[in-house]
Every structure is written in structure tokens, then in C-alpha cells.
Length: 173
Image (cartoon, rainbow, N blue to C red; front, side, top):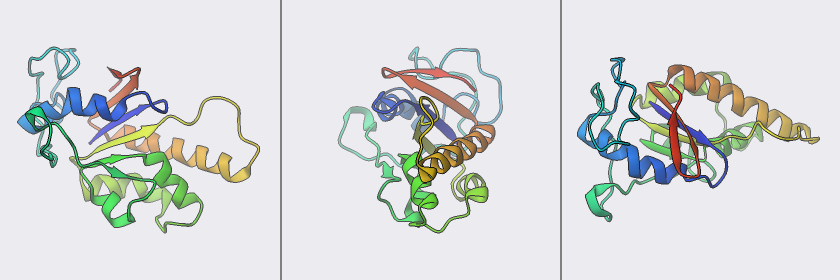
């Protein structure tokens, strides 16, 4: 599993499509089997990094050069079963919001494990929502807190964790 996080509209999905998908499709994503990589950001140099992507092939959609377009599933609108089993998920924080608001019936305590078991080769993209002023609305505070907790569990279980700012990724795990 790969977790990609960063601020709103910072180019996270574009980064995944541009820098990670080629390696995922060719089975060269560094660290996917726990092998140490050489410190280079996978895909950033154009050379394959160490490690094999144990089954991390994803489902690439046609339409862009090199087959790098991805069929993303949006956590803000997707059916829960679809989101929980999709290879490429974005707006994870919106999916958690739907759970907190009661729109979706999924146990937050088990969400990270359910997602990992359902599809261990997935890419999850989420916005960082924990910075700034603490909201006065109790639901907003709960959403922010629960999203942070679930993302911590996802990061602990992920093979790779990336933080993206201005479309540039920094591997933090």
C-alpha cells in the first residue's frame, strides 16, 4: 500500500500518475517487499529503484501516453464497497467524513485494516486536514481527529508514504 498526503490542490494525484505509476506497472516500486531502497525517490530519476512491487500493478486506464492515466475512485461520492476495494483512491479524508457523519456505515477503528486486507496493493491519496485553527463545530473536530488517527494507522501499515507539496513528492517512509 502507498499513502500519499499533502495539502488541498497540491498535485497529489498528478504526482502519483507522473512519478509512481510507471514503477507500479513495471513492478519496480521501491520498498514494496520490505527490501531497502538506495535512498533515491522511486521514479524521480528515471531509473528503477530497488525492490519489487509485490503485486502492485494497479489497474491502468488507457488514454494517456505510457498508460499512466488512472481510474481514481473518489471518497466523497463512491459507494463504500467500491472505495474499499479500489486500487486508486483519492479524497480519503472525504470518505472518513462520510463515516463520521453517519452516511457510510464502516467501523473507523477497523478502517485501515479493512482497506489493507481488501487491497494491499492500493494507492490512497488524502488531504492533510489537521493543521490550522481547531474548528468550533464538534463534528468538524471529530472528523479531523478521526481522519488523523486512521491516516496514522494507514501510514504505519503502508510500504511507502509520500508527502506532496506543489506537485513535488518527498518520501517520508
